[in-house]
Image 1 (cartoon, rainbow, N blue to C red):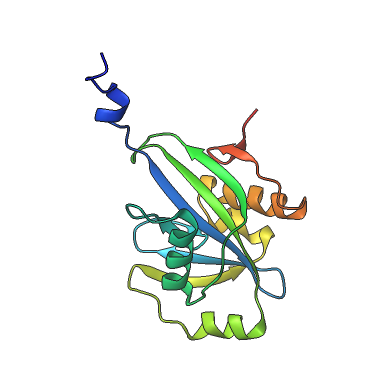
Image 2 (cartoon, rainbow, N blue to C red):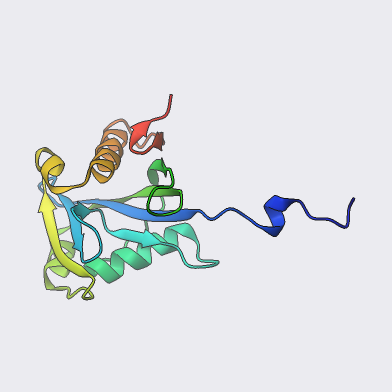
Length: 162
């Protein structure tokens, strides 16, 4: 019947959409943040609010956490994460660029909110010990995509989908 809406429209599934930025300094180190609510470091970012454009959510979180205002229009990777403690989610990693010395100074002077416990610059070889497994895989895949020319891989919990 046309009067009845399908279940998918009346009771849509809950899904998280995360937006993170891969940002490098002039030496090739990656900008990461520590948070009060998760163990390990991660790329700056967070969830979009209702009706917020995804790239603007990434930009808002990046600015709040690091002081940087970046365009964040190119996606390096998408990563599906199945439901565990939180509902299932899809994370998008945007290319934030390689910073100028002035932008690096902005990060150094910025005072993030209390939920951010620290801002760090790490090289790729240091990531495994500083990040949880999924964050490490996601970051590594985004770096690999960047090296290949910003290919857009689809990831499943940080591993390229077959």
